[in-house]
Image 1: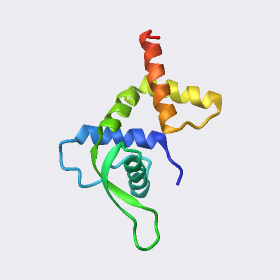
Image 2 (image 1 turned 90 degrees about the vertical axis):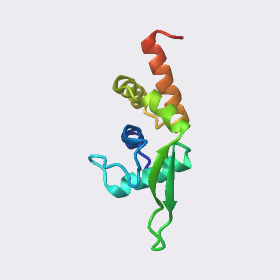
Image 3 (image 1 turned 30 degrees about the vertical axis):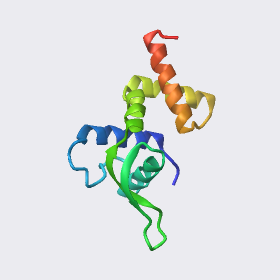
Image 4 (image 1 turned 90 degrees about the horizontal axis):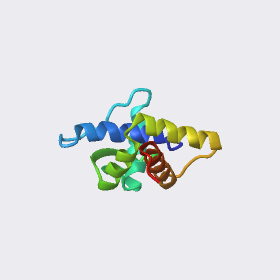
Length: 121
């Protein structure tokens, strides 16, 4: 399954909105299956964006996870990605360049886009 940064952002938005409550289950994200969300929670745990209870099923299916909380790094990324304007402009720049961005490069582009909107160097 391909990593979907739009889904990562949506999961972080949902998780941060309900943080403090017992998570116990992954958020439901319209247009995505529970398996897609669980797989991305697992990827996000590997990337340090969230803490999660993860496991690899014995039947050979892909690793899965249940989100327990958003980490400091996850909140930092979400702060950069929260604005629809910043998110859409950064994604458009990447699309216009015809490149897939790594997580680190996407975060840098989000911060640079926000700075540009604020008139900062």
